[in-house]
Amino acid sequence: MFKGMFRNFGVYLLLFTFTLGLVGTLPPAASAQKKDDGDKQDDKSKTAQQKPVSTKRLSTMENPDMIGKRKVNSGTDKIFGWLGGSQSTEIAIGRQLALEVEQQAKIVQDPLIAEYVNRVGQNIVLHSDAKLPFTIKVIESPEVNAFALPGGFFFVNTGLIMAADNESELAGVMAHEIAHVVARHAMENQGKMQAINYGLIG
Image (cartoon, rainbow, N blue to C red):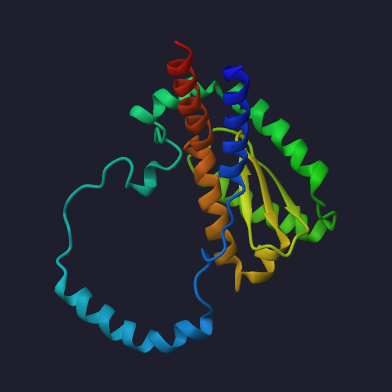
């Protein structure tokens, strides 16, 4: 009885984690930024002259040359990721969730929009630590949102595309969501739920 209840709770928690909106995560409008740009330029030139150049070597995680070679999900989180399942399990879970999303949402069929968003996303994936392919689709919805499911299944709302002032803003939100998949956050959360279930059952 408890096992089924906690499994359902885990599924709902996982879905809730992925569908959190990104409202308010976009940078302020360019018009608001222009006002402060003059002050910021003066501050930047002053601080640039005051800060000494660091000779400290960058760590593997800080070094941009190591992107694609880093082990992003390591340490204690790796244990929870292992409990959550293998990469094939992650892809299977993501595929099932993506099918549910596609049944409930209206996917944009316009090839220009779909290809544009896919190109932006795949360029980010190419220059990330991702170890799996990404499937990127656009949902017709005015809500400013994007979300990534386990296994590289990624959805971007048209509301986000319209709210972004430029490609960089869209790419920033997409990169954030791609990082969740790369770091296997969903599988870590599932692993934590498994640990809780084992603790309650045992």
